[in-house]
Image (cartoon, rainbow, N blue to C red; front, side, top):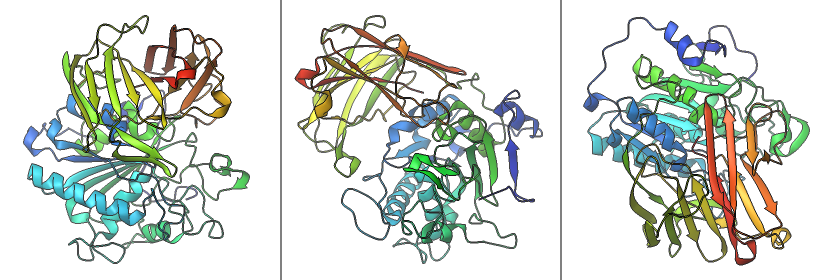
Length: 482
């Protein structure tokens, strides 16, 4: 994808000074009256490569806070979320495009049966958009495997498709380099999806309302140089507008990174207006109405040599503690103590929106992870947990190890302020936001508070944890909500 062609239905570059919601609001005429809750379409959220349904938790809070019933908001967990190196060759612990399409099809049918709805809204981040496009175009057709879709794909079951940061034209486009890789814009998978359709030569499957959301120039996987895919100095043949599609409404969120174009409040506001035709009703800029008493639960899943999975980590031991917001010290005994069973579920835990938590996950072959989270704003059944890999040989002499992580976005310098233990976090390159974890190695093993602070525009978060002795397999993780 190169320059935007005349005739593409694009919202263009949204000026920061106006803000996304304000500009989109200016384009709308008199908004329709709010529908009843039972008439709202169910939404299925589709995570990206290597990820989990947990990344959609704040987005689900936003839809709930703006009128959507929780039972109409569903986030899929792909069993093996990482793509194969070669889409045509079986690879242990990895999934093909057809694997993902089949699981998404099953989830859509389950949601339609549970809600009685005729169609769903699909919202995907990154690779999740590939699964959405593949399902809509090919489920039951020539490119699919099974299902009763005829040759029309899954379009009859989808009203809206929203793709955030999806590499619709690849992370690189060179038929001579890994031609069967799912993310090669010159490979058969994406070339097939992008083949012209209809009288206008659109790249989207007709019968569905399509929207793409992309960055202006801050998406690590939509860059003209291959630095972020391990090919520094090599042209990718992909430009900043690679995620856009001819025939879609194409929205640009300036300065947002590869994940923020799905998970940031601005991305929610754009998606909400696209589906409803009106602005969100909950207070901007976060669009979340907190609950006082809430219930948390989720999955505990594993990591293999091939990458992360969303398969249950049976036998792992989990404990959850309330902690002091200023010191990270535990307040009383464990709120949850549980050995993970075959279904992989943990919880439920009843807590409140003022209490920070420590999640301690211990599984054979992994480090003992002490993950600290700021108070949760609302209930969630997608608080998914994965273990930390065993401590590397180079770090085993450390007194304590700390990670500061932003799962739903990347750290960007100088865009963001990222402080770890009172100092600018190390290892975050200036320029394109592409690093989601900052690490700290401490010589002293003595237990003490350690603080992660993050500020970026309207988002500000502070997490206080405790250090733990690395010599005893312990690591500290400070995990951001936004």
